Image (cartoon, rainbow, N blue to C red; front, side, top):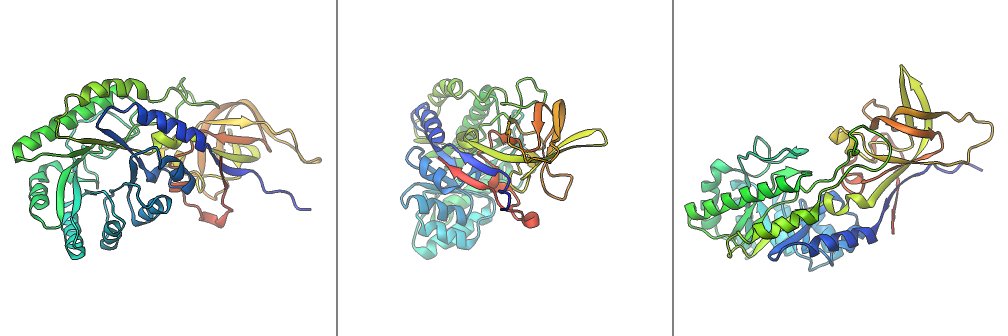
Length: 391
C-alpha cells in the first residue's frame, strides 16, 4: 500500500466570513456601502456567502464578471482595473454592471464607443491618482508614479471627455490610494483629503457627484505584537468599530448630494478566515540556518514572498511517524520555512522562533484567506494542487 499524500490544504470558515462581514456592514454609517473586492479571493463558496451581505462585488476582469454572475445574476457589480479590453467592456455592458471605474481618457472613449454601439449609457466614476501626501501603508496606489488612475493634473481633460462623450454618464469619482493601511486615524485623514479634493473639483468645474468611491485599503496585520518573528497569531488588527464611529461624524460633513459613499474591501473581509495547512517533510541545518521544508510553498501561497514578510503560523503536533525513519526536529530555535520548489526564493517565513517542530508535524499559516491561492503560480514544477475545504 502506498503512503498517503502529505497534508496540504486551504481551509475556509464560511460562517466566520459571513458573521464578520455582517458586523462590518452593520457598523457603516448611512449612505455608505460595502462592496467586496473579488481579487482578494474569488472562490465560488466565498462569493456565495458574501453576496447576501455586501452591496455587491468589485471586479477587475471579464473572468471576475463571469464569476460574479455565476453566483447571482442580479448582484450589483462595479468594474475597475487599469487594462479593460473592448471585449471586456462589451461583456460588462451585457452583464449589466452598475458602474465603470475609468482609468484614462482613452478608456472613456472605448467605453463610449462600445456603449453607443450597444444603444446603452454607461455610468462612470473617474479614478484619480491624487498627488497626496498619504499616510504610510504596505502598498501605495497613488501619490506617485503608478499605473493606476488619471493623473490629478489631467483631470480637467478627463472631465471634459466624461461630460461630452455620448454613451457615458459622469456619476462621480473613484479614489483608491493605499493598500493594507492599519491605522484608523490615518484612514480617516485620507478620507478627509478625499472630501476636500472632490468638493474643490465640484466647485472649480461646476459639477455634482452622486457617488464617491473611497476604495478599500483597510489592512490586515501579519506581524506579531512583539515585532519579533515567532510562531502564533499576529498582533492587533484594524479597529473597525473605532474607525466607523469617527467615520459617522466625518460622513456628516460630506455634501448631501453625495447619495452614496462606496467602500470596496477584499482582504479585510476574508483574510482572517482562511488557513493554509502544510505538512513538514524535513528539518535540516545548512550553513548555520535551520530549515523546515514543507509539502507546499509559494506556488500555493505566494503572499509572504510577494510582500517579503514572515507569515504567521502555528505548529500542530502530529505524533504518528513511520517506524525505522529518523525524525529530525528543531526545538526553541529560529527556523526558516521553505517549500518544495527549486528556488531559494520559495520562503514562507524566515528566522521564526518555534517551541518545537518535527518532520511530520503540520504548519497552519493563519490569515491566509486573501491573496493566497489567487495570486500564486500554481503549476510551477507541476506539483499537485492543495485541497480546498469550505465549511
